[in-house]
Image (tube, one colour):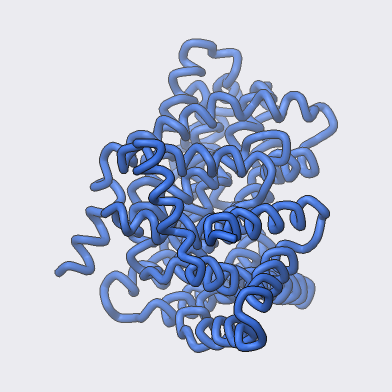
Length: 441
Protein backbone atom coordinates (compact mmCIF):
# COMPACT_ATOMS: atom_id res chain seq x y z
CA UNK A 1 0.00 0.00 0.00
CA UNK A 2 1.38 3.43 -0.97
CA UNK A 3 2.04 6.14 1.60
CA UNK A 4 -0.49 8.40 -0.16
CA UNK A 5 -3.21 5.75 0.25
CA UNK A 6 -2.27 5.24 3.91
CA UNK A 7 -2.50 8.98 4.50
CA UNK A 8 -5.99 9.06 2.93
CA UNK A 9 -7.00 6.05 5.05
CA UNK A 10 -5.83 7.79 8.25
CA UNK A 11 -7.66 10.99 7.35
CA UNK A 12 -10.87 9.09 6.49
CA UNK A 13 -10.71 7.07 9.72
CA UNK A 14 -10.32 10.26 11.72
CA UNK A 15 -13.32 11.90 10.04
CA UNK A 16 -15.46 8.80 10.66
CA UNK A 17 -14.46 8.80 14.33
CA UNK A 18 -15.42 12.47 14.62
CA UNK A 19 -18.82 11.75 13.05
CA UNK A 20 -19.52 9.15 15.76
CA UNK A 21 -19.58 11.93 18.34
CA UNK A 22 -16.40 10.89 20.12
CA UNK A 23 -14.39 13.50 21.99
CA UNK A 24 -12.15 15.38 19.57
CA UNK A 25 -8.90 14.51 21.37
CA UNK A 26 -9.93 10.84 21.68
CA UNK A 27 -10.84 10.51 18.01
CA UNK A 28 -7.74 12.27 16.68
CA UNK A 29 -5.21 10.88 19.15
CA UNK A 30 -6.68 7.37 19.08
CA UNK A 31 -6.53 7.10 15.28
CA UNK A 32 -2.98 8.49 15.19
CA UNK A 33 -1.74 6.10 17.88
CA UNK A 34 -3.45 3.06 16.29
CA UNK A 35 -1.94 3.74 12.87
CA UNK A 36 1.48 4.47 14.37
CA UNK A 37 1.46 1.03 16.05
CA UNK A 38 0.25 -0.68 12.86
CA UNK A 39 2.86 1.02 10.68
CA UNK A 40 5.94 0.98 12.88
CA UNK A 41 5.26 -1.54 15.63
CA UNK A 42 5.75 -1.20 19.38
CA UNK A 43 8.48 1.40 19.02
CA UNK A 44 5.88 3.85 17.72
CA UNK A 45 4.47 4.10 21.25
CA UNK A 46 7.27 6.61 21.86
CA UNK A 47 5.62 9.07 19.46
CA UNK A 48 2.76 10.24 21.73
CA UNK A 49 5.08 10.01 24.75
CA UNK A 50 7.64 12.31 23.12
CA UNK A 51 4.89 14.62 21.89
CA UNK A 52 3.57 14.95 25.45
CA UNK A 53 6.97 15.87 26.88
CA UNK A 54 7.71 18.26 24.01
CA UNK A 55 4.53 20.09 24.91
CA UNK A 56 4.95 20.03 28.69
CA UNK A 57 8.52 21.34 28.38
CA UNK A 58 7.32 24.32 26.33
CA UNK A 59 7.45 27.23 28.75
CA UNK A 60 4.92 29.53 26.95
CA UNK A 61 2.25 26.89 27.65
CA UNK A 62 1.79 28.65 31.01
CA UNK A 63 0.10 31.53 29.18
CA UNK A 64 -2.89 29.39 28.20
CA UNK A 65 -4.59 28.96 31.61
CA UNK A 66 -3.70 32.53 32.61
CA UNK A 67 -5.45 34.07 29.60
CA UNK A 68 -8.42 31.77 30.01
CA UNK A 69 -8.62 32.83 33.68
CA UNK A 70 -8.47 36.49 32.68
CA UNK A 71 -11.32 36.12 30.21
CA UNK A 72 -13.61 34.40 32.70
CA UNK A 73 -12.74 36.83 35.51
CA UNK A 74 -13.57 39.77 33.25
CA UNK A 75 -16.87 38.18 32.28
CA UNK A 76 -17.94 36.89 35.70
CA UNK A 77 -17.10 40.07 37.63
CA UNK A 78 -19.21 42.33 35.35
CA UNK A 79 -16.52 44.95 34.69
CA UNK A 80 -17.87 45.42 31.15
CA UNK A 81 -21.17 47.02 32.23
CA UNK A 82 -19.59 50.40 33.00
CA UNK A 83 -17.71 50.33 29.71
CA UNK A 84 -20.89 49.65 27.75
CA UNK A 85 -22.66 52.55 29.49
CA UNK A 86 -19.89 54.84 28.21
CA UNK A 87 -20.29 53.63 24.61
CA UNK A 88 -24.07 53.79 25.00
CA UNK A 89 -24.07 57.48 25.88
CA UNK A 90 -21.37 58.69 23.49
CA UNK A 91 -22.59 56.88 20.37
CA UNK A 92 -26.35 57.04 21.08
CA UNK A 93 -27.07 60.25 19.07
CA UNK A 94 -25.95 58.56 15.80
CA UNK A 95 -28.13 56.25 13.71
CA UNK A 96 -26.84 52.78 14.50
CA UNK A 97 -24.70 54.35 17.21
CA UNK A 98 -25.50 51.75 19.87
CA UNK A 99 -24.52 48.98 17.44
CA UNK A 100 -21.27 50.81 16.62
CA UNK A 101 -20.67 51.30 20.36
CA UNK A 102 -21.32 47.60 20.92
CA UNK A 103 -18.64 46.80 18.34
CA UNK A 104 -16.26 49.11 20.23
CA UNK A 105 -17.11 47.25 23.43
CA UNK A 106 -16.36 43.95 21.71
CA UNK A 107 -12.93 45.19 20.62
CA UNK A 108 -12.14 46.20 24.22
CA UNK A 109 -13.39 42.85 25.55
CA UNK A 110 -11.35 41.01 22.92
CA UNK A 111 -8.19 42.85 23.93
CA UNK A 112 -8.63 41.60 27.50
CA UNK A 113 -9.64 37.96 27.21
CA UNK A 114 -8.75 36.16 23.95
CA UNK A 115 -11.99 34.13 23.83
CA UNK A 116 -15.14 34.72 21.77
CA UNK A 117 -17.47 33.28 24.38
CA UNK A 118 -16.78 36.13 26.84
CA UNK A 119 -17.72 38.75 24.23
CA UNK A 120 -20.84 36.80 23.32
CA UNK A 121 -21.95 36.57 26.96
CA UNK A 122 -21.36 40.28 27.60
CA UNK A 123 -22.99 41.37 24.34
CA UNK A 124 -26.05 39.16 24.78
CA UNK A 125 -26.60 40.18 28.41
CA UNK A 126 -25.79 43.92 28.18
CA UNK A 127 -26.06 45.21 24.62
CA UNK A 128 -28.81 43.07 23.11
CA UNK A 129 -31.59 44.01 25.60
CA UNK A 130 -30.67 47.71 25.38
CA UNK A 131 -30.80 47.80 21.58
CA UNK A 132 -34.03 45.79 21.36
CA UNK A 133 -35.60 48.12 23.94
CA UNK A 134 -34.73 51.07 21.68
CA UNK A 135 -36.35 49.42 18.63
CA UNK A 136 -33.17 48.32 16.87
CA UNK A 137 -33.78 45.66 14.23
CA UNK A 138 -33.41 42.29 15.97
CA UNK A 139 -31.81 40.64 12.94
CA UNK A 140 -29.10 43.28 12.65
CA UNK A 141 -28.24 43.46 16.35
CA UNK A 142 -27.83 39.69 16.73
CA UNK A 143 -25.43 39.80 13.78
CA UNK A 144 -23.53 42.68 15.40
CA UNK A 145 -22.98 40.73 18.62
CA UNK A 146 -21.94 37.52 16.85
CA UNK A 147 -19.51 39.32 14.53
CA UNK A 148 -18.09 41.46 17.34
CA UNK A 149 -17.56 38.53 19.69
CA UNK A 150 -15.64 36.66 16.96
CA UNK A 151 -12.92 39.34 17.23
CA UNK A 152 -11.92 37.71 20.52
CA UNK A 153 -9.97 35.03 18.63
CA UNK A 154 -8.10 37.58 16.48
CA UNK A 155 -7.17 40.54 18.70
CA UNK A 156 -4.34 39.70 21.16
CA UNK A 157 -4.27 37.93 23.57
CA UNK A 158 -6.00 35.45 21.23
CA UNK A 159 -6.13 31.92 22.67
CA UNK A 160 -6.65 30.51 19.15
CA UNK A 161 -3.37 32.10 18.03
CA UNK A 162 -1.68 30.61 21.11
CA UNK A 163 -2.97 27.16 20.08
CA UNK A 164 -1.85 27.72 16.49
CA UNK A 165 1.59 28.76 17.74
CA UNK A 166 1.87 25.60 19.86
CA UNK A 167 0.84 23.22 17.08
CA UNK A 168 2.63 25.04 14.24
CA UNK A 169 5.74 25.71 16.42
CA UNK A 170 5.62 29.46 15.76
CA UNK A 171 6.26 32.48 17.99
CA UNK A 172 3.12 33.44 19.92
CA UNK A 173 4.43 36.99 20.33
CA UNK A 174 4.73 37.43 16.56
CA UNK A 175 1.29 35.89 16.02
CA UNK A 176 -0.30 38.30 18.50
CA UNK A 177 1.24 41.32 16.85
CA UNK A 178 0.23 39.97 13.44
CA UNK A 179 -3.39 39.84 14.62
CA UNK A 180 -3.57 43.50 15.71
CA UNK A 181 -4.15 45.31 12.41
CA UNK A 182 -6.29 42.56 10.80
CA UNK A 183 -8.46 42.61 13.94
CA UNK A 184 -8.85 46.39 13.75
CA UNK A 185 -9.46 46.12 9.99
CA UNK A 186 -12.36 43.72 10.54
CA UNK A 187 -13.78 45.85 13.36
CA UNK A 188 -13.54 48.94 11.14
CA UNK A 189 -15.29 47.15 8.26
CA UNK A 190 -18.06 46.03 10.63
CA UNK A 191 -18.55 49.59 11.92
CA UNK A 192 -18.53 51.02 8.39
CA UNK A 193 -21.20 48.52 7.31
CA UNK A 194 -23.40 49.33 10.34
CA UNK A 195 -23.05 53.10 9.79
CA UNK A 196 -23.81 52.96 6.05
CA UNK A 197 -26.69 50.52 6.46
CA UNK A 198 -28.31 52.59 9.22
CA UNK A 199 -27.83 55.82 7.26
CA UNK A 200 -29.66 54.24 4.34
CA UNK A 201 -32.31 52.59 6.53
CA UNK A 202 -32.60 54.68 9.74
CA UNK A 203 -35.37 52.47 11.16
CA UNK A 204 -32.83 49.64 11.63
CA UNK A 205 -30.85 51.66 14.19
CA UNK A 206 -32.72 54.69 15.57
CA UNK A 207 -30.95 57.30 17.67
CA UNK A 208 -31.60 57.77 21.38
CA UNK A 209 -34.80 59.69 22.07
CA UNK A 210 -34.65 63.49 22.44
CA UNK A 211 -35.83 63.21 26.05
CA UNK A 212 -33.09 60.74 26.94
CA UNK A 213 -30.41 62.85 25.27
CA UNK A 214 -31.54 65.96 27.18
CA UNK A 215 -31.18 64.21 30.54
CA UNK A 216 -27.49 63.47 29.93
CA UNK A 217 -25.26 66.46 30.67
CA UNK A 218 -21.75 66.99 29.37
CA UNK A 219 -20.45 66.53 32.88
CA UNK A 220 -22.02 63.06 33.01
CA UNK A 221 -20.58 62.22 29.60
CA UNK A 222 -17.09 63.21 30.69
CA UNK A 223 -17.38 61.26 33.95
CA UNK A 224 -18.43 58.16 32.02
CA UNK A 225 -15.09 58.27 30.18
CA UNK A 226 -13.53 56.99 33.41
CA UNK A 227 -15.05 53.59 32.58
CA UNK A 228 -12.42 53.27 29.86
CA UNK A 229 -9.54 53.61 32.33
CA UNK A 230 -9.77 50.07 33.79
CA UNK A 231 -9.64 48.32 30.38
CA UNK A 232 -6.72 50.52 29.33
CA UNK A 233 -4.83 49.69 32.54
CA UNK A 234 -5.43 45.95 32.01
CA UNK A 235 -4.37 46.12 28.34
CA UNK A 236 -1.25 48.11 29.26
CA UNK A 237 -0.35 45.77 32.13
CA UNK A 238 -0.53 42.88 29.72
CA UNK A 239 0.27 43.86 26.13
CA UNK A 240 1.89 47.24 26.75
CA UNK A 241 4.55 45.99 29.18
CA UNK A 242 5.27 43.07 26.86
CA UNK A 243 5.84 45.31 23.83
CA UNK A 244 7.98 47.70 25.87
CA UNK A 245 10.23 44.80 26.83
CA UNK A 246 9.53 44.86 30.57
CA UNK A 247 7.81 41.45 30.64
CA UNK A 248 8.13 38.20 28.77
CA UNK A 249 5.20 36.42 27.13
CA UNK A 250 4.46 34.38 30.26
CA UNK A 251 4.96 37.33 32.59
CA UNK A 252 2.57 39.51 30.58
CA UNK A 253 -0.17 36.88 30.87
CA UNK A 254 0.36 36.81 34.66
CA UNK A 255 0.28 40.62 34.75
CA UNK A 256 -3.00 40.65 32.82
CA UNK A 257 -4.60 38.05 35.10
CA UNK A 258 -3.45 39.97 38.18
CA UNK A 259 -4.67 43.32 36.85
CA UNK A 260 -8.11 41.86 36.01
CA UNK A 261 -8.43 40.33 39.48
CA UNK A 262 -7.40 43.59 41.17
CA UNK A 263 -9.88 45.55 39.03
CA UNK A 264 -12.69 43.23 40.15
CA UNK A 265 -11.54 43.63 43.77
CA UNK A 266 -11.36 47.45 43.62
CA UNK A 267 -14.83 47.63 42.10
CA UNK A 268 -16.18 45.40 44.88
CA UNK A 269 -17.18 42.60 42.52
CA UNK A 270 -14.72 39.94 43.61
CA UNK A 271 -16.47 37.43 45.84
CA UNK A 272 -16.32 33.70 46.49
CA UNK A 273 -18.96 32.85 43.87
CA UNK A 274 -17.14 34.78 41.11
CA UNK A 275 -13.80 33.25 42.08
CA UNK A 276 -15.22 29.71 42.22
CA UNK A 277 -16.89 29.99 38.81
CA UNK A 278 -13.79 31.56 37.24
CA UNK A 279 -11.40 28.90 38.59
CA UNK A 280 -13.73 26.04 37.70
CA UNK A 281 -14.17 27.23 34.12
CA UNK A 282 -10.47 27.95 33.76
CA UNK A 283 -9.49 24.45 34.89
CA UNK A 284 -12.09 22.79 32.64
CA UNK A 285 -11.16 24.70 29.48
CA UNK A 286 -7.39 24.49 30.11
CA UNK A 287 -7.49 20.71 30.52
CA UNK A 288 -9.57 20.35 27.38
CA UNK A 289 -7.06 22.39 25.39
CA UNK A 290 -4.16 20.34 26.79
CA UNK A 291 -5.66 17.03 25.65
CA UNK A 292 -6.49 18.49 22.25
CA UNK A 293 -2.95 19.78 21.72
CA UNK A 294 -1.42 16.43 22.73
CA UNK A 295 -3.65 14.64 20.21
CA UNK A 296 -2.73 17.15 17.51
CA UNK A 297 1.01 16.71 18.06
CA UNK A 298 0.67 12.92 17.91
CA UNK A 299 -1.39 13.12 14.73
CA UNK A 300 1.13 15.49 13.16
CA UNK A 301 4.04 13.16 14.01
CA UNK A 302 2.36 10.27 12.15
CA UNK A 303 1.67 12.40 9.09
CA UNK A 304 5.23 13.73 9.05
CA UNK A 305 6.51 10.17 9.23
CA UNK A 306 4.45 9.20 6.17
CA UNK A 307 5.60 12.16 4.10
CA UNK A 308 1.99 13.11 3.42
CA UNK A 309 2.87 16.80 3.09
CA UNK A 310 5.04 16.14 0.04
CA UNK A 311 2.30 13.96 -1.47
CA UNK A 312 -0.31 16.71 -1.10
CA UNK A 313 2.04 19.32 -2.51
CA UNK A 314 2.67 17.07 -5.51
CA UNK A 315 -1.08 16.56 -5.99
CA UNK A 316 -1.94 20.28 -5.88
CA UNK A 317 0.93 21.65 -7.94
CA UNK A 318 2.12 18.88 -10.29
CA UNK A 319 -1.11 16.98 -10.99
CA UNK A 320 -3.73 19.72 -10.63
CA UNK A 321 -1.47 22.49 -11.94
CA UNK A 322 -2.42 25.02 -9.25
CA UNK A 323 -0.24 28.06 -8.57
CA UNK A 324 1.03 28.56 -5.00
CA UNK A 325 -1.61 31.29 -4.48
CA UNK A 326 -4.26 28.96 -5.90
CA UNK A 327 -3.24 26.35 -3.34
CA UNK A 328 -3.59 29.00 -0.61
CA UNK A 329 -7.09 29.95 -1.79
CA UNK A 330 -8.07 26.29 -1.85
CA UNK A 331 -6.87 25.88 1.74
CA UNK A 332 -9.02 28.79 2.91
CA UNK A 333 -12.07 27.43 1.10
CA UNK A 334 -11.56 24.05 2.75
CA UNK A 335 -11.40 25.78 6.17
CA UNK A 336 -14.69 27.57 5.52
CA UNK A 337 -16.32 24.31 4.40
CA UNK A 338 -15.04 22.39 7.45
CA UNK A 339 -16.07 25.25 9.70
CA UNK A 340 -19.70 24.53 8.87
CA UNK A 341 -19.36 21.23 10.74
CA UNK A 342 -16.35 21.50 13.10
CA UNK A 343 -15.08 23.96 15.71
CA UNK A 344 -11.82 25.87 15.33
CA UNK A 345 -9.79 23.47 17.49
CA UNK A 346 -10.88 20.39 15.53
CA UNK A 347 -10.08 22.16 12.24
CA UNK A 348 -6.63 23.11 13.48
CA UNK A 349 -5.88 19.54 14.54
CA UNK A 350 -7.04 18.09 11.23
CA UNK A 351 -5.25 20.42 8.83
CA UNK A 352 -2.28 21.93 10.70
CA UNK A 353 -0.09 18.81 10.20
CA UNK A 354 -0.83 19.07 6.47
CA UNK A 355 -1.18 22.76 5.72
CA UNK A 356 1.46 24.47 7.86
CA UNK A 357 4.45 22.53 6.40
CA UNK A 358 2.92 22.96 2.94
CA UNK A 359 2.58 26.72 3.44
CA UNK A 360 6.25 26.93 4.47
CA UNK A 361 7.37 24.79 1.50
CA UNK A 362 5.45 27.10 -0.87
CA UNK A 363 7.43 30.05 0.47
CA UNK A 364 4.67 31.72 2.51
CA UNK A 365 5.10 33.12 5.99
CA UNK A 366 3.51 30.81 8.63
CA UNK A 367 2.80 33.83 10.88
CA UNK A 368 0.73 35.45 8.12
CA UNK A 369 -0.96 32.12 7.46
CA UNK A 370 -1.91 31.90 11.14
CA UNK A 371 -3.85 35.16 10.72
CA UNK A 372 -5.61 33.82 7.61
CA UNK A 373 -6.52 30.67 9.53
CA UNK A 374 -7.94 32.74 12.40
CA UNK A 375 -10.10 34.86 10.07
CA UNK A 376 -11.53 31.71 8.53
CA UNK A 377 -12.21 30.47 12.08
CA UNK A 378 -14.20 33.66 12.68
CA UNK A 379 -16.23 32.91 9.56
CA UNK A 380 -16.64 29.29 10.70
CA UNK A 381 -18.01 30.48 14.05
CA UNK A 382 -20.91 32.10 12.19
CA UNK A 383 -21.75 29.72 9.34
CA UNK A 384 -24.59 27.20 9.54
CA UNK A 385 -25.48 24.47 10.13
CA UNK A 386 -23.16 24.10 13.18
CA UNK A 387 -21.65 27.56 13.71
CA UNK A 388 -20.53 27.88 17.34
CA UNK A 389 -21.74 31.48 17.74
CA UNK A 390 -25.13 30.66 16.21
CA UNK A 391 -25.99 28.25 19.00
CA UNK A 392 -24.52 30.48 21.71
CA UNK A 393 -26.69 33.35 20.48
CA UNK A 394 -29.80 31.17 20.41
CA UNK A 395 -29.12 30.07 23.99
CA UNK A 396 -28.65 33.65 25.23
CA UNK A 397 -31.10 35.65 23.10
CA UNK A 398 -34.68 36.45 24.22
CA UNK A 399 -37.57 34.38 22.87
CA UNK A 400 -38.56 36.89 20.19
CA UNK A 401 -35.23 36.24 18.41
CA UNK A 402 -35.72 33.01 16.47
CA UNK A 403 -33.08 30.70 15.01
CA UNK A 404 -34.12 31.88 11.53
CA UNK A 405 -33.43 35.48 12.62
CA UNK A 406 -30.00 34.46 13.88
CA UNK A 407 -29.14 32.65 10.63
CA UNK A 408 -30.25 35.65 8.56
CA UNK A 409 -28.31 38.08 10.75
CA UNK A 410 -24.89 36.67 9.93
CA UNK A 411 -25.12 36.91 6.11
CA UNK A 412 -23.83 40.51 5.69
CA UNK A 413 -21.17 40.11 8.38
CA UNK A 414 -19.82 36.90 6.84
CA UNK A 415 -19.56 38.73 3.51
CA UNK A 416 -17.69 41.56 5.25
CA UNK A 417 -15.33 38.99 6.84
CA UNK A 418 -14.65 37.43 3.44
CA UNK A 419 -13.77 40.89 2.09
CA UNK A 420 -11.40 41.33 5.05
CA UNK A 421 -9.88 37.89 4.40
CA UNK A 422 -9.29 38.81 0.75
CA UNK A 423 -7.63 42.10 1.73
CA UNK A 424 -5.22 40.39 4.16
CA UNK A 425 -4.44 37.68 1.56
CA UNK A 426 -3.63 40.29 -1.11
CA UNK A 427 -1.71 42.57 1.27
CA UNK A 428 0.28 40.41 3.75
CA UNK A 429 1.94 43.53 5.15
CA UNK A 430 -1.25 44.32 7.06
CA UNK A 431 -0.45 41.33 9.29
CA UNK A 432 3.35 41.25 9.05
CA UNK A 433 4.32 44.92 9.36
CA UNK A 434 3.97 45.15 13.15
CA UNK A 435 5.76 41.87 14.06
CA UNK A 436 8.52 42.67 11.55
CA UNK A 437 8.91 46.14 13.04
CA UNK A 438 9.00 44.92 16.65
CA UNK A 439 10.99 41.70 16.35
CA UNK A 440 13.26 43.03 13.61
CA UNK A 441 14.47 45.97 15.60
